[in-house]
Image 1: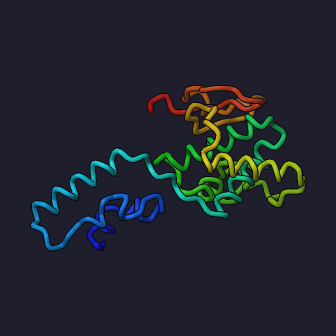
Image 2: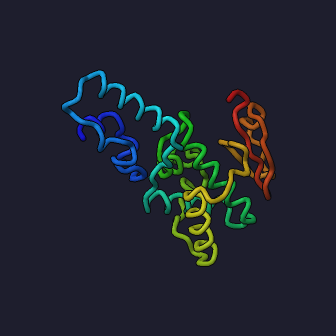
Length: 189
């Protein structure tokens, strides 16, 4: 089993596959190196053909995503709230941004006008005060984390409200408008 952990750490950590499903139970340490190598090669092909394991998200990720939805888009239709959530996850998936939801949401610190999402560094309390809007933000966050809704932004990494015109918007490709938000991605992907 040590060999399998060394070869398949992502899969074994994901909980999606059991060793027997990958054929690891059939590896016999007494077999020749050539036979074992052929078995491992076959298993690698099976793993490459398997669907990508979804990243594991925890309660902290859920809360950070829900807070971002709540503060950035609670007055938007559900589609706009999903779009804000998807931009957050698109950033997590991008090498240009931090690798976790909370790190993306908190990027830039708490100094005013230095953060990525204005609610994070506006100096006000971040505690939700509207129960209904908070419940909806949590529900949308769960659905997006479960990948139950598609990305309506077409891969956007940025957005702004339609009543502002940030200078950076001229250098990106606008993908869509949802509610009062305009969504963008880099021109070269």
